[in-house]
Image (cartoon, rainbow, N blue to C red; front, side):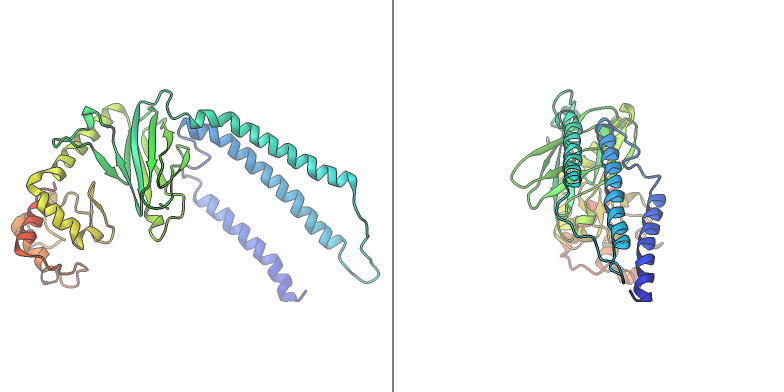
Amino acid sequence: MTPFARRLAIAAPLAALTFLAQSVVAHADEPWVNAPMGPVAREIQPVYWILFAAAVVVLVIVDGGIIYSAIRFRERPGHLAKQFHGHNMLELTWTVIPTAMVIFFTVISFQRLQFINDTRTGAQMTIQAEGVQWAWNYKYPEEDRFRLKSGKYLTGAEDIHVPVGTKVRIELSSPDVIHDFFVPAIGGKKDAVPGRKTELWIQADRPGVYKGQCAEFCGDGHADMLIVLHAHEPAEYAKWLAEAIDFANLLDDPETQRGRDVFRNNACVGCHVIRGLSGGRVGPELTNIASKPNIAGVQSLSPVNVENLKKWISNPPAHKPGTQMPVVPLSETDLDALAKFLAVLK
Ligand code: CUA
């Protein structure tokens, strides 16, 4: 071994360990496997730790044996490695122990699977979650409390709202490729598979915001498929719902239909978030644009009304030199419709 190779052989594992330790410390406060926040996660957690501990023991024994043998029995002057064929005791040991371990893991997993997979018993509500390249879209149940003026039912994207302490069935689907619904602190993890329905259930013990992420690589935008699960106390849930319904009614209003279509069919939709309508992340969120004191921080474009919105959209750089927002060519009617739509977003 050259001196450089020797130094590398010592430094590389040390660097890897340091990196690992650092990330463990950096993420220690995140609700991960060590802080289950729902019944499913609580079932999974012990199995996780047992498997993890067993894996560490196996790693130490196997790698320790390899390293020890490589050093102790290496070729060197005056030493010939012992030659032998077959060793009943050794072979029995490394067959029986792993077999027993695998059986044990299977048993403790199966014991819990029935509870984890039982999406029906006691479920109080079903939310449809569609994983699509690259967003999660939710459909709330067809119950009166979720009904909009138009007769449609409430939908949402990225954020999903559930009442605390309630068993919620999530029905998963996908129109394109396989996605995976995963909110670690709440537990459960299931693929959304094109052409079929899959389901899991979630229940949050305490109110809060629990983060999740699509856990199946599904293309360029995979990392954008966040899941933000909000669990509310019943009173808070009713409050959220009332606001969500109001806003959805606003977005669903036939008066502003044309403007919404303009927004959706042009470059706007790619850059701006409007809650419940679009998920672009490049530009500022427009969900409450009409409540802002001015447009894009430009003092002369105040208040946010149809007239000023038209001025801004027709030529952003003229009002704010250097702005990232391009001039999007729109007909006069489209521009008018778009401004009228944006002006109601309070
Ligand atoms: Cu969807 Cu990854």
